[in-house]
Length: 471
Image (cartoon, rainbow, N blue to C red):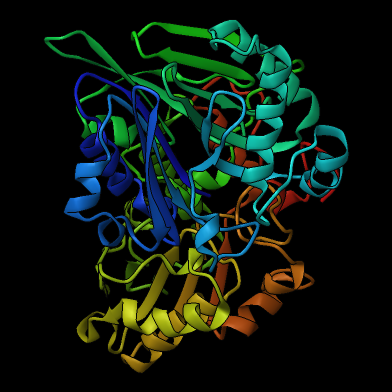
């Protein structure tokens, strides 16, 4: 899961890209990069680390130009430690193309194996994003007249890309002297939105993974990019769009609403915050059925993404809501940190209990999900160490039993605490007194209720049903 951003504006756009990446830092903390274009010249700064650590004053001075793209990386494919895999990626021919990608290709290995023999292109990294870039470049070369790129050539190249590429992807790309364009996978799994900002000089346009990036920069949210659609914004601020794939349907990733997206974002016309509130209400109704009345003294969220669900759950149960854990905001999101050892070390650095909220109480701890169980188990132990008389754990999402192959770091079933275990066995593994999971059918129904235009939700990590085929 990564963040992508592209902009065509008046004057230098480097600060806008920087600010947008800061607003979407939650989507990836491993690496970041910005590329701008001034005329035909490309300016690049990228590296491993957070946005605030990579870009210095001297870098911003060099990132000149009225068009540009940026990326925050959360690795699901490739080498997380390699500087060479920081995005955006660049390829020289044809025209010079820069691309950044959110998602994961399911046929990357097959594409890579045929890339040299068929396309005469060499892949330098283990990243599927570089493969995606080279597929597009090869398709664009087929439609190129060798002189100047135009929107029709780009659309035809995206048509060709869709014929070859499988998986989940939302991309922004840039061609110097031409403009910025974005495109989305035919199933609409990964999010991408279009925004507009009116200035004295004229309209400026941007593409982003989340609407919060547009809102923070003063852009209005125009609409979501449709499944299979490509939107082109030329340097002259002209906007072109076309559906470039067949058999399109809208199936956004359910985990965006559960965990990844910021609550103030709107994805495919659904407020993430409202979706989480509804998950909390539904979870509260289930807790009422399975936990005896009077057996819970206080509801405590695991900050931050579970707060809306925990708040609505406490209202449903008519039980006090309390902030029992204080979060160190200088520690990243543990779920997306690479490596189990780093995750284990980070939990106690990240969260600190307020003793008075736990001592001699029966506490209901609410989290958005339970993935590997390492974070949850340590949180339970922290509650007990703080003096909790009883610890009940509630997950606002169902048990995660299957790997995700569309851009979320759940690569093997053995890493998932719910794989091969009953809910009671998960409870014992977490060492909690009671455990309540959200029901899958109820969660899907609740999220779908916000937008009747959705064809479904990508929920393979919960039900093992993969929209592009088996894992």
